[in-house]
Length: 189
Image (cartoon, rainbow, N blue to C red; front, side, top):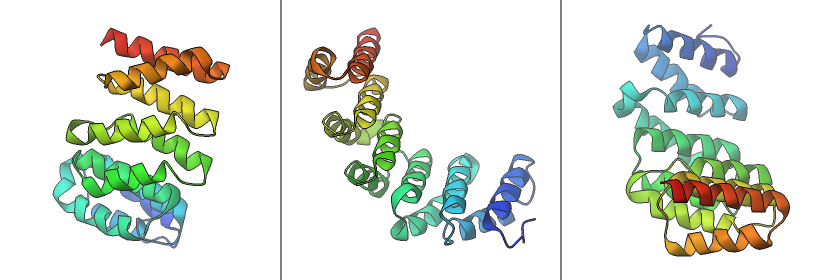
């Protein structure tokens, strides 16, 4: 199955072998090939699997960095997320995610807002700023995801709290609910 013509099959087979602690070098090589192929679903799947392979960070980060260069849309999101799992201070991955908050595709913006909610460390202020922009998105789903992600990040600047309070009083009902949940999370921490 690792040599199947379908890159999705190869990615699933590689992931299975990884979880069985078998042929780790071959698994990494296979996922590295798939993450740069033309099948976007296979790219996303491989990036997700590579992101979870924490024991191989030294080998995987260069593979993901190479894949990020030519990736766009959802594939770029998955690759950036995987890079940040291996290196929470990966500036290029954060730069890509913050840029994706302005993507024309609502699904990309919504998923990016969700992903930014798990950023930690020195890059967290950049995630907060990108999510603040998401609070003003034209799409309510993106606004909700941005608010909830801000709540999940914990400590945020006072301006963010003020923006969430404003939204909780003046936005559409589902966005108000998300802002209220975010505020509850912030007050609990």
